[in-house]
Image (cartoon, rainbow, N blue to C red; front, side, top):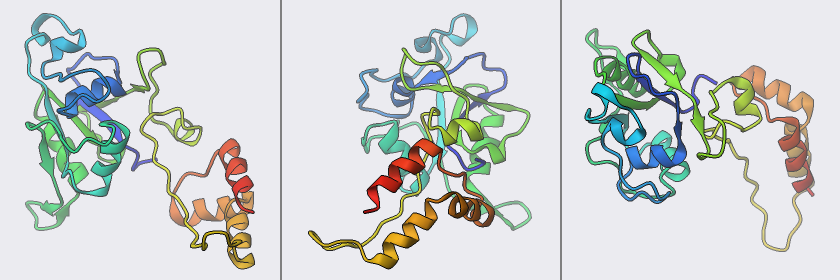
Length: 214
């Protein structure tokens, strides 16, 4: 749960939530979801002093796995990110210890009321807040919680896949089949959660995957 992709804004920002289309318009250049480019908070319906304020995006370096997922899910595969986005990678802190890129992103956002950031809840701090996300304008805004990640109602949920090397036209080896069946069993899921910290598959998805193990 604590490594789930979340969208953060400064605590002074009153925005209630964003859709994937709006996130694409903020973090991308091509607007593949049809929202064009959004560069000021007023374009998201915010008025008053916020209307003319520029949006400053923060995120991971765009070639790391976290960013690659965001690119596929939100930017619909576009390689053209917002040119003004500030990218962060792991770097030594003042004490010489390595600071995680996710922490550096949130730390930067904490000092920028105009900012918006992609990071993880483990680095949340009082100056920022995570906002709920909607699949589109016709869907409800959903906060990232263990339950919404398990049932996949949260739009930025990531799935850890398992691959088996099987030659075309050939059956899966018995040992491979039994291992996957165990992994997808309730006991297997329990062990996985205990030893990895990952969230389990929801029952609907677990049963669906079991049907694929022939």
